[in-house]
Image (cartoon, rainbow, N blue to C red; front, side):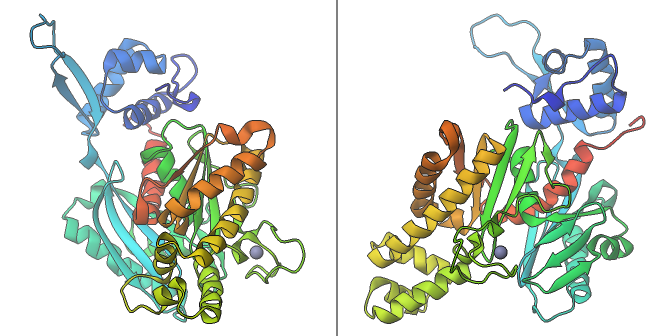
Length: 415
Ligand SMILES: [Zn+2]
């Protein structure tokens, strides 16, 4: 795999800190690698690599392993010494705030979850109270993992709606009723750990770019649907937030120009009014009411533990035509919206999450066909369309990734 351009180091103009960043990012993306390979990949001298990696070894951030050359009968020379990141060198806390529930997880440097907890909250609770409960869960999670607090890089928070990343403020989360909530300030004051906050779908995109299927992709977008619809965009390893933190609000692109349903944003006919769990449930309940005895009616009436969206997908998988036609129509709208995204961004990779991933066997082929058909001049042909690498963990892994990336991009004065 060729490292992306931002991974290339330089002996001429860039500072030591930049070269260390490049080494850490390369080890993250490429896995175990020898010093010689590292020097070659990053266009750095062997001496520079030896000096910098020896500092990283001393710091316990990377480790060195002796690897035997392959082949039993071949006479081999010196075994190769490979460098790799030490997963337990640092930890991060991920907090995913959803609509009515939050999830807290502790991860290692590779965003692998050590512990994860979910808790629901009353939408009528003041945000400060919800954050206070989250803080208790964060402290409990750190204690349960028995890790050195000094090795915790910080806390990443994926919040719903519009987020000012620079200030760590949840500017507007209509579905939570939150407005201008200074999440970062409240949490940092109590935790005494660095906290960063971003929109939850953006954090999911970031996780894919660093730790999932998006490694090596220069431009990718993550499209998430559940209570609402949103997208996150990563370009060359950096989240693209736009000029006013509003980039990726795909859920509020107009799909039905006239006579569409009213959206939470105040407009009508937005993508989100056609593609969300509550919308699907309400439409299919109406269909079920007019078709008693149909598979969808039976599935929605069942007393199992499945969520409503799982029951809808189950009816479609069992061959219910009403549900299949409904999904076909709605997935086409998603395909159109994604084709528009492709025309604007020209991404290599689009990743679907949430309900789109849960029902991907039913949704993805329709979205893919529509996207390829509708995108300009074959741009859609080259895009890889996949589901999230992290399943239901996408939100919390994303939040942790937000904190972890601060470690990889950190400016180091000495190390
Ligand atoms: Zn809208």
